[in-house]
Image (cartoon, rainbow, N blue to C red; front, top):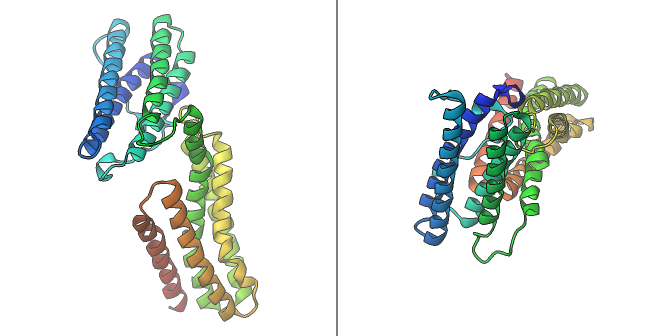
Length: 314
């Protein structure tokens, strides 16, 4: 993946064209998902799709005048710093609130992209167009905010709160889930192999700290936050690393109890509390259906837990 700051003006325009094409298709998918139950809102999304097409045409005209007919195929996933988007075709039936939040996040990210790109270009024509498109994307945010049925008027502050979820809640949740699940196998393998609480505690502590360091660096290097507003990469990395370590320590600390069987019983109870808490957080804050969240987290955690036991007793 290339960093955004390394892109040339030609590559920035090519990326902008590609992004407008993708956004238009996403609005098509949203409109199709809403059409059966919310036809009026579906039509509004189709209007937004037409505006994205108009943005693309303006970008294409400017690109041709500056760089000719060939447009390099640069996608958002080729550039570090964009937020991963959920596949909308899997969200059926679609709620107005889901569609609105998706549109707000898309438009805020695109607006940040145009504002950041405009500051980096020295071409007056390119800077003007990118600035105009940023202002128009801001209007799209307000349009999306007004769509939810029987909802109060939302301001851009509400969108910023959702980005707070990306900056704090999401990296913390990723870390907590990884720390709670990935350390189960070595911890319980050690408990059943050694039948010694202290040695098990040391192994669990090492696994938790090692996982925290690994996950912290992985998160920090995944996105520099320039385009997404997800915050400073090292802050996100620190949050992820800390929560990963805490997730591993939760079921490691019971092994400070000298009796290994009592410690294991307490640790198992802690594990189930951790897994169901993570499933609840994913359901509440990340729009993951509760059944899916339970299956992904709890069932996965149980499988890792059982693998640790099998290894330990073998």
